Figure 1 (tube, one colour):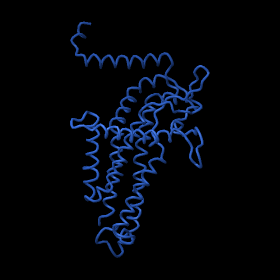
Figure 2 (cartoon, one colour):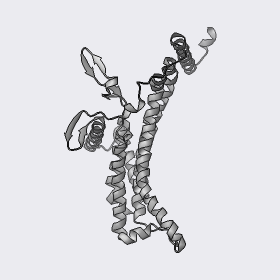
Figure 3 (cartoon, helix red, strand yellow):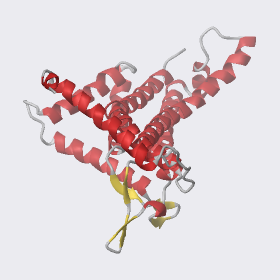
Figure 4 (cartoon, helix red, strand yellow):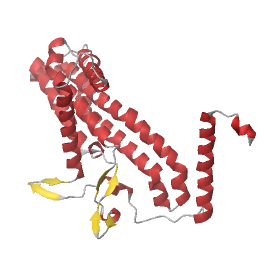
Length: 305
């Protein structure tokens, strides 16, 4: 064993991890077997199902989707107000991070895609969308006791408790749809205001197109305008939903579905890596993409093709 002493600490940690990882996989495989049985009672889609907790009024119910939206809004407003009241000439790390994000929203997102007057007018909306979506996405990677699926409840000392779960409001398609509708109405209204109704429709057609080509290009451009709504909605929803599904499957969901206990152990490191990738990169990237597309659409609505 003397040859191990010459290894670096990093190498020892890597080898130790591989030994525990592979050894645990072999042990679980020998203990529980390598042949599983499909678990028909486990439905992965139930992870994202909204179970109604209480009826509020009209068509509005209280569920975990509503809770996450309220939490994201409260955290966004509360954090911004708290930081704004504690601004200092020598900023701490939190203030530095917020100022950096503010600068990205101001320069790279709005100023680069709109003229000065439009940027001043629409910056509050674009920045709010960015920070709100960012907080909502990040909140989705914090396990909270919100899973009220009757099949996954925890029974403790006679009390029935909800199990912990990773859930994001953006994994429910209705939330990205509402945000996309806000942007869609805003940039079309801005285009009509700048060009007039007829002029705005004409501005969608590239310059120089006429005659027979106009018959082909006009419906394509109208469809392209409508598809902006879908692209905003689906990009945010699909990316967050796929990420959460991957985390769930790699962190034990696939093992439960197939009835293979050793699979949960062997896939767990990949689940951790995907979780870190999603929380560190994807959460902020999707907020940035949504905000910059909103700014691009607003800027292009007042310009001529």
